[in-house]
Length: 171
Image (cartoon, rainbow, N blue to C red; front, side, top):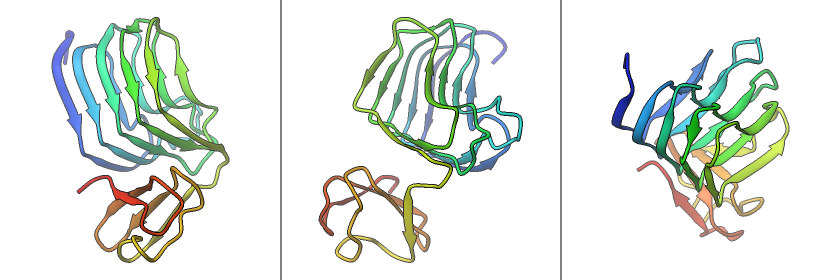
């Protein structure tokens, strides 16, 4: 968009191994960034890129919900970056796992945060993987643990610590 975009939806994408921002929006009014899985995004070795980037040019009333952002490098600047003119955005139920400099950089005001999960600040990814569903076979390490079914390319999140407490995210 050359000017401010309106009512844009970015939903249910699997975005892997992108050298710069995974999702970048510089000007938007009323939009949704929902249910995306971003892994190894912002991996260019300059420490200036982010997983989800809402720029400095008026990003308002955007719902950022149910996304997973993970990085396997410490070279990433932020998992989520909200620029100075980003305000009245609603950020809920996201999982940020990374070795990023910071999980969330909120330079706008006011933005609203609710029930986001921030993983440990470790360069190692905090998820398990295997071929097939983890339900009834894999015990989660903790609530919020993630599992990638490599056969079906389906992500799961643990809502409890029992083997039946896995919920599929992107089916």
